[in-house]
View 1 (cartoon, rainbow, N blue to C red):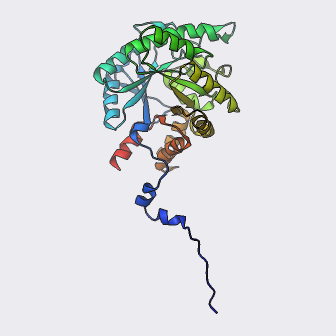
View 2 (view 1 turned 135 degrees about the horizontal axis):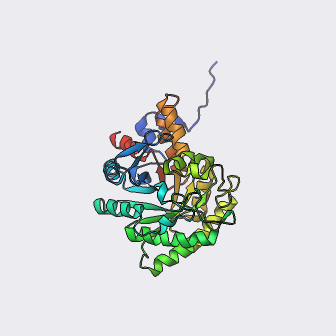
View 3 (view 1 turned 120 degrees about the horizontal axis):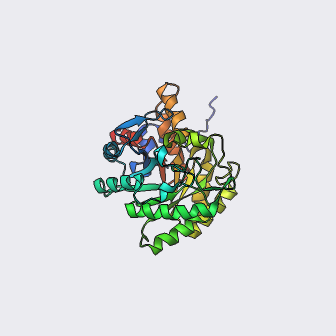
Length: 332
């Protein structure tokens, strides 16, 4: 007896028969233009030195940094984020060197922009690389004082803009700083300087290797940044933070960290339709890279992690693996 078998009219596996078909119908694409390479530049360093807690990542002296940036550009990446590693002798309780127009990072930015005028250079605005206590602001009466910190952040922002930074990125999480920095930029003929606000920066345990890299970990000790960075338990608050910073003049919004906060990336992009960046932070990078190096995970997991961030809604991604991934994509 013949029994007619009814097969599905739609077979989704038809579109998965080979890699060319998979790529043809893919919903998400990741290119070198989506990637931003962070780079650590260290004061009074000749050459480079490895960062123990970040496999394959180094601190660079200025001359060596220029060679590294050339390699980054050759990989297809056109955007870098500069993070200074300040000599301990130049740190104090107020982070005064951040407001010194002739400071180390200002010199480094000028050298980079002279050598690579077309590169998009993002400069961090925060005091933690400059303070001897490791916090992002000035401590008064045993707490980080919001308004006194902003006064220094404004000076720091103007110096970075004057040095040639294309984008300045306040990562400090002080209330109201975006509006005051924007006003200062406008009043000082820096109306075209882009503001990338770390609006949704969470008080995460994934930042440890970065703090080792910039030398703030030992200063911070067991002290917490919970009074100014967001609680990982909140997402409505992230929307509030983003709305405030957009209203104050932010051009781009940052979510940090990335993979543990994919829901936040999606929510912000869907709600505000504003350029939204995400930061695959040091802890995310290091746990994946160490696992790859030890053979515990296949190397493709790094690319997979970046695609997940892009799929969630990020327009661009800060990643320590940016150069490596970009080279892989160029050679594919």
